[in-house]
Amino acid sequence: MKYSIVVKAGSSQEKVEKTEDGLIVFTHARAHDGEANKKIIEILAEYFEVSKSQIEITSGQKSKKKTIEVIK
Image (tube, rainbow, N blue to C red; front, side, top):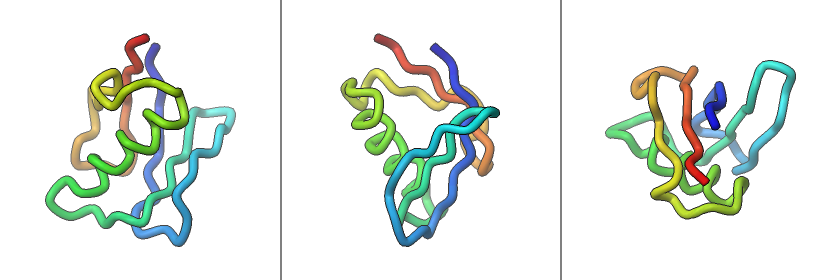
C-alpha cells in the first residue's frame, strides 16, 4: 500500500498524524545524512505494526514530501 507523507524533521515530538492528503510524520531527527529518513521508517513501522524492512521510501529521498510503500 502506498502513502504520501510529509516529514516534519526537528520536531519536539515523534508521532504520525493522519490527514486527508496522507500522513504527517514528526521526528526529533534532523534532515542531515539521511538521519530523518531512518527515523521515519522506524516511526512508521511502529505506526503500521510491521517490521522496518516492510517500509520503503519510493520517492522523495531528499524532500519533505515523500511516497512510501508498506509491504504487508
